[in-house]
Length: 393
Image (tube, rainbow, N blue to C red; front, side, top):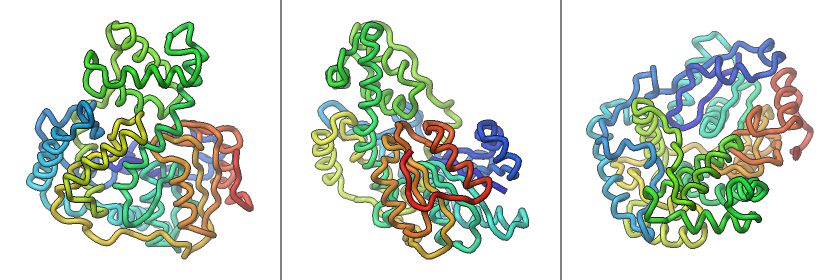
C-alpha cells in the first residue's frame, strides 16, 4: 500500500490515485495499491465551512498581499473577519484540525486496511504531515517519500513556511527571467534576466493593474515551467496596456473549503505573533529585502486573531526511528525553498537521505524533477534501495 498525502493544508487527496497514479512508473503501480484520502475537514471528510463573506473569498486574494506602499490596513480587517467567522461558524470540528490529528487519521487508515506498516508519498505540506506521522509512529512506517519539504521548526511551522515564500520566489524567479530573456523578440520583457526582473518590478505596483495582480500571478506561475508563457504574456500585456489574459483560479466551492482548512490548521498548529505593529514593521522590512513578493510573506493573517494557539504542542522531528525516509527537493522551489528542506533533513538525521534536484518549481518527483531524481525515488519505492549518502541530481 502507498498512501498519497496531499498538500495544503486543505487540498483534497481522494482522487490522487487516478491523477498522480497515472504518472507513476508501471513498476511502482505493480508494487503497491494506491490509496488516496481527503484529510479531516476537506472535501468529503466533513468539509469545514467558515461561511466567509464574499469579499474574503476572492481566490486572487488567497495570499495576504499588502496594499499600495505596503499598507496592511485592509489585511488587518480581513484577518479579523476571517478569524471571527471561522471560530463562530466552524463548530467543534475547527478545534480538531491539526497536523498531529492528521497523523492520527493516517494511522487509522493504516489500521482500517489491516497493514502493520505503511508506505507513503507526501508532497508539499503533505511532507510535514508525513514527518509528523514518522515521528509519532516511527515503528509503523515502511518506505517514506517526502517531496518538497519545509522547515519543521516547532516554534514556527506554518508561520515560518509563509515567510519562506520570500526566499523561494527570489530563488526561482531567475529561471523565469532567463527563459523570458531568451524570448525577448516574442514578449519584449528584456534581453537579459536583469532586464526582465526590472520590467516586472516596474509594473508590479502599477495603478493601471488590479491590485497585486501581477505579483500574485507571478508567484503562482513560477511553481511550474509550463506556466511561464502565461506570466510572460501577462507582463507583456501590462507593459503594452493591452487586455490582460485570464489567470485560472479554483472554483469558489473548492476555494472556500481549502482556504478555511488552510487557515484552521495553520493557526491551530503553532503560535503566531499577535501584535499588529509587529506585522506592519515586518512587511516594511520584507518589502525592501525581497521586492519580488512585496511584503506578502511577512503580512498579517487570521492567525494573529486566533483565540487558542496551539491546540497541542507542535511535534519536534527527531532522528528517533528507522532509517527509511527518502527526501527529494528541487534546488529552486518558490514555496518550499531548498534551504528549508535541508532543515527537515537535519531534523531527521540518520533516518533520511536527501536527493537535491538541480531544477526549479514546486514538486520534484515526476513533476519538475529529472531522470536521475525520478529514478532514485522509483528505485526506493520498488525495492527499498536508497543512496548511501545524500546526492545531487
